Image (cartoon, rainbow, N blue to C red; front, side, top):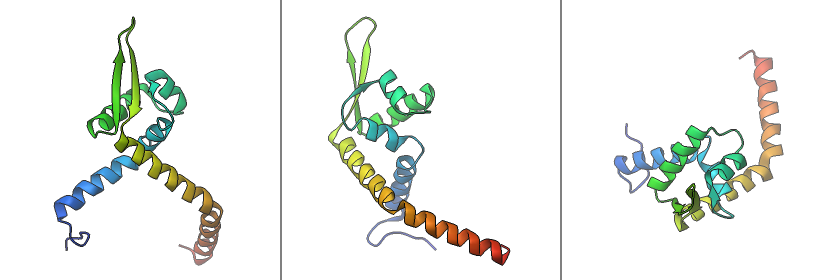
Length: 127
């Protein structure tokens, strides 16, 4: 059985799933939200996104650039300085990411309570 959203083809749903997977990975939203306030150079961005490796940041930035979420600007200096900034599309993603983060913050205590009750009931039932 093929599951698709009403009015969408299976191919469109696969593309949506692929993008959701990328946006929901460990680094993409963190990078996009970090760039929301202002463009940053590579090392500034790496320091701001705690725990990301140079290789993973490079990979994430290339993917975001390919998807049209950010621009890469090389400033003519010695050594050349490269700055990354969000496009309007990237800003719209950052806005939605911050909204989602806000929703999580608003409901975190409630979710933690549900998890604790579930875990307690699960432990008493021997699952």
